[in-house]
Amino acid sequence: MNLQRLTQKSAEAVRGAQSLALEYGNQQIEQEHILLALLLQENGLIGELVRKLGSSPQVMAEEVRRAVGGFPKVGGSGADNMYISSAAEAALNEAEKQADKMKDDYVSVEHLMLGLIIRATKSVKEMLDRYNITADNFLVALKSVRGNRQVTSDNPEGTYDV
Image (cartoon, rainbow, N blue to C red; front, side, top):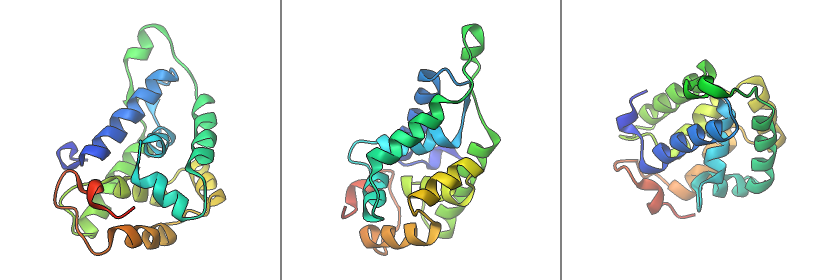
């Protein structure tokens, strides 16, 4: 994934995922870290879209937080060697594909979420299913706030009608 294409909020989410992995003592960044970072963004688009889909982003974040808390922990010098899991990388690459498919110049948080939905691991898919989050209904909710606008700047989230 080309990190230069991330919007400010997407870059913040990726850094947040890294911080969460560090905070929980996890050696690799998993899809759950990215999902939690998206849900925890202050005034974030993903939280609003989850709400539009009839769920509570806070309740969902707590479930994701419990999952992250169950990941293996490393200490000592091993904690310095953090890397991204192949599943998280697949979701990020899918996010970039979704941005291209939507003819967007930048990879925004909605693309990250779509990447997670489309390339979800079994555990993330089960979680998303519990909250009725599918690619189709996510895109419907997204269209209600984004309309037909394209992502042409690194701060499009500030222009959406949430």
